[in-house]
Length: 116
Figure 1 (cartoon, rainbow, N blue to C red):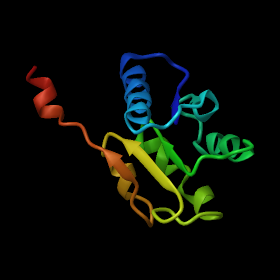
Figure 2: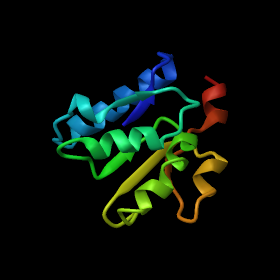
Figure 3: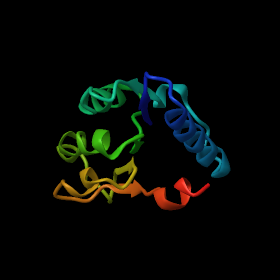
């Protein structure tokens, strides 16, 4: 997971959701699989970190489509997205559609959220 060094509610909620999903699927969470980054820092720095691990992950969940889109090219140099590597962004923004291969993204229903 690529998360944010800036501790804001939305980022923390995405982290909790990530950890809950792992737990719900019987996957043991590994602290080294969470990389804390600034929103403005390119995601390829996180990708290089993950690749340096003894057991690199075969999927990355990012707290934003923007960050996820910035690591498509480095991933594709070694893996085939959608076949042996997964990349998931968040927010269903235009960034999830800007790459040659679409990024899986988590959409939020902003209209209904605004009505709460």
